[in-house]
Length: 236
Image (cartoon, rainbow, N blue to C red; front, top):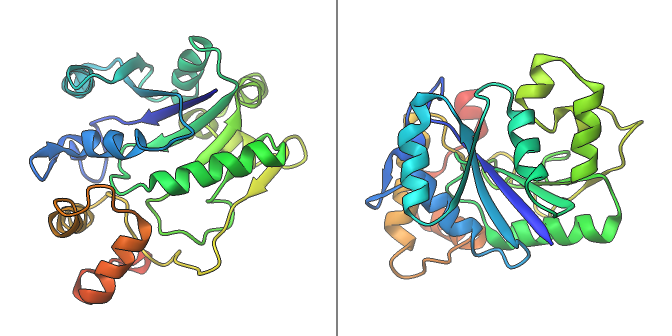
């Protein structure tokens, strides 16, 4: 059984409230959850947000849409994740973030499959980047995160959840997932107004005809409309 945890909050430093911004009339966070829900290897999906009043609306929107919601510390996201994990029996955990409204369920499934086959403590397509930023997937053993909780008290490791795993390759077994064509220069996450405009343009072009569009369909769109291309270098 696989537990997926989508972390999100409304108090983004660069684009506050972005997860509630409309994309084709639906909040971005619900677009992200819709896409993640299509991953066949995920058994349980939970939104992990904060108990801060700033996230009241986010929790209400997601809960009203029928998704599970857990609320925990605002900045100690590691504890927030462990609270979700401790409430479930699943040993395999997937970490996803709410600013990735273009995540590809096929990529999610592939990274989960690679993790289960590898026997690693932590598997990700971010250790050696070849996917567009915004298709990020991390998979880890629940016990590995519990071990990090015992090992660390640093603010950065408690905020960034899995940092305490992959910065300790001597302690944890790491496995990297890559794809043959390097697309790591492409930027599909939402941190800035221009990123949100890109996500909206992709949905407006693809969603009605093919709501299950993924990485390849977006790449095909960018071939047709190169003026839409967003690159990591745009915000270097």
